[in-house]
Image (cartoon, rainbow, N blue to C red; front, side, top):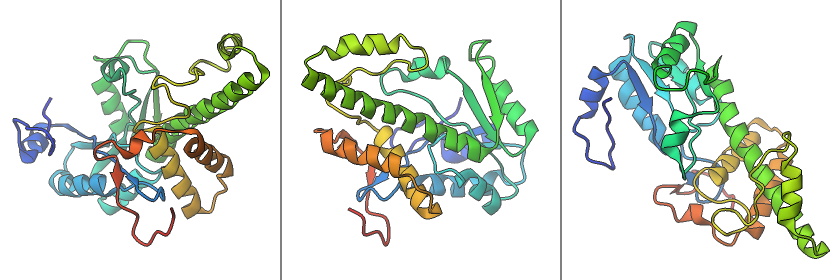
Length: 261
């Protein structure tokens, strides 16, 4: 495995990584805009621009791991038609990233070419459990699946917070109620309130950024995402610690031309 990072000292140069690798993974941030109008794709764009010219016309595969707006990888493929692109979204938690990488609930491979998808699948198979499920799809579906997963979990967190508030008013033990509800496998777990950080709502790097990104996409496509908008507004209301604003590199400047606050 060869790697390069601008923020960490690497034993290889970017050119050495590219020339020595069959599969090239782009794992860089997509910061949230400070005015919450969307996410800043410029870091991913820059890396793709730098790498595309060096792998164009070759058999190397450029795999986007960064969480990007649905349609992004398709846009890259249109801009760089001689590059083999794929989208393989990352489903890692901040608490146990190594375990999550080696024991994924599923591996989603979005590619335009079946042969490219199969090559990526074969790359993963020796490392992952034999019964690990794979979904081979197109890049835009893979991108949307990542956002849907995270925003569905965020919605669940906010609903749990509302039931927590209701339990307090009714004078009942929320944890007792929660355990009864979690026994229904359709509902699942992760209903603990307050959360692991002791605060209400959701924070961290992913959920806030992903909801804001989808809301920005909805506005651009003129799709009504009012339920998602309500979840985000409620989180801003009940969340005391907006830790995502303090994470280095997680917030970018306001989007050009944006007037949102």
